[in-house]
Length: 101
Image 1 (spheres, rainbow, N blue to C red):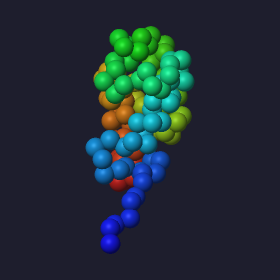
Image 2: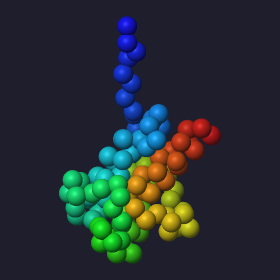
Image 3: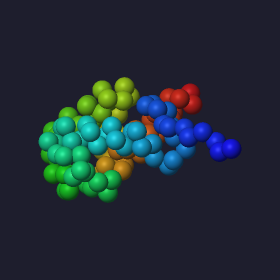
């Protein structure tokens, strides 16, 4: 008898290195803020270069992500986020910190 399949729920870390639910939600927020199709967004895309986000776009994006995930994204930490993958990993880590605290 095989083990039941468990799906990831919002705000719960998955056993994967990156939570698929977090990735989907980040893609949706980026698409909404930057007026892009989700299919145009890749994990390796640079927020500034590939997605052509201005500084204002980036600030708006981080505020929207804070709202989506109910987590604070301190300015000194988000300046290090270059790619979409960086953002997904950052948020996933923030969610895990909260659930393990």
